[in-house]
Amino acid sequence: MEKYRIDPSKGLEFGLYTLGDHLPDPSTGERISAQQRLHEIIELAKLAEEAGLDFFSVGESHQEYFATQAHSVVLSAIAQATDKIKIASSSTIISTLDPVRVYEDFATIDLISKGRAEIVAGRASRVGLYDLLGYDLRDYEELYEEKFDLLRKINEEEVVNWNGEFRAPLKNARVLPRPQNGSLPIWRAVGGTPASAIKAGYAGVPMFMAHLGGPVSAFKRTIDAYREAAQQSGFDPSELPVSTAGFFYTAETTQQALKEYYPHINEGMKKTNGQGFPKQGFAQAADTRSIINVGSPQQIIEKILYQHEQFGHQRYIAQMDFGGVSFDQLKQNIELIGKDILPAIKKYTAKN
Amino acid sequence: MKIVVLSGSKVGSKTKTAMDYTVKAIHDKYPDADVTTIDLAEYDVQFSDGRNYLEYEGDTKYVAKTIMETDAIMIGTPIFQASIPATLKNIFDLLPVNAFRNKVVSMIVTAGSPKHFLIAEQQLKPILTYMKAQIVGTYVFIEEKDFYRKEITNDDVLFRIDRLVEDTVKLTETFTKIREAKEAAYNF
Image 1: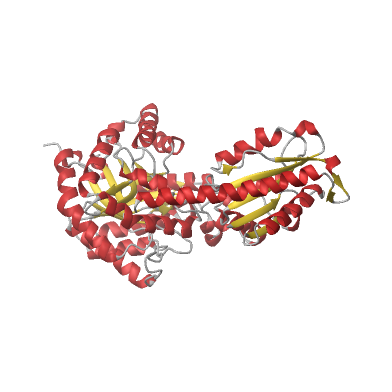
Image 2: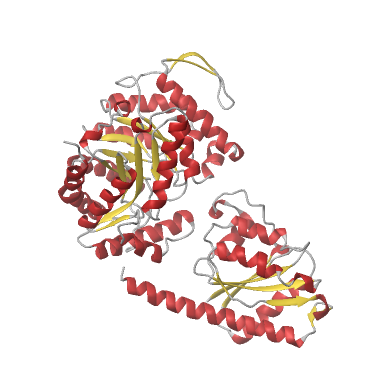
């Protein structure tokens, strides 16, 4: 775990992630400017750090209603604005980028942040960016696998010799600058299915698993499949960190949390995916066995501890800003995390 | 209430004839219903390549989006080679997995042979169920002999379509009402 800068004895890491969505607040129908949204994301990272959170990440989405397409630029602003919190992408769409440039960017962010940068590499659930950036959707899988491998190679080897289909060959190439401690933690972004997870297991890379809704037990199968695949490929699963990432919202009572967050999720998903989030499914979020972490601080603590017991994961990342949640609401959430949730999680998961 | 009347084939006229009558029956009985007719023969819809439906353009996006935004869909389909036509299957392939959640779907089938009666039951219904539709259980099955020169000549077929229209509207109204009451009870 040390290679990935994780110390399990300190307990479950807790972080925030944003997709950088830029959506109207459904209660007013108003949308803040892209500029304000970017500043609020940077501010949110600072507040997360002050509240003692471990991690903050920003994703790229090249479609309408998003503002952090240039996510590495946003991350470098966050690197400058913060001192302790780990920062990462969630995720970097490596398929449509040049791994050399990605590595240069993130190694630079690592130096600016003094050793706090990580990369989560994914392949996008939406495909508009393939047209935008000039790639053929038919190469979807190969683009990802080849470029992800190259990214990891650059991370592990200071002098790279490489040949592939989607990029000019590298001959004795030095990709500079190097990160502060020689390498970066690089995670494979995985959707919730076992089929997706085993690919991370085969390669023995840390898994960053996103989840929308459903029972914890279903996602446990995905995590089990990942560890099993890693074991079969000769890796030690106990050395491979797992991160889970999904919807989060807390308020004084569970009912209030559901009430405040649901319109954001539902209306936001209608705009970005063309389908809302079914209310019936969201109502089940109140159940401890549901993976959606929406509820009172006490309910969230129970949920996250239950997930930790089931998953044995090293990091949980909360998405609480989707769908135009106001900055005041975000501040209240961070306050409750820092005051109630985080201390309890650390207390019960840290090994003394 | 938004109703899409979908004629699922580019070939022939019988399904189109049945769906034209269906539209008329809706207008007669439910003049307030907001009806959109989609005859796939009139649209240039591309084959699904797996992208989100919002990312298509032109006719493909129009057809997918219109279906996604409706409350009820009355699907008309012929049977070719003992199957629903590829044009109709492609519409399903263009849409997300849960596309018919909270939507009511009913079926009108035209076929050259009575041997095809169970195809809607055994092939079309499982697709609609998988996509989370509330299905009107009975469907109207129309044979070649019920048509003459682009008209339905069998009054029994016309009665059955009238009843299917009623059932579709009735189920949409009741289902929507019950769902809204249930959702209001969640109190969030």
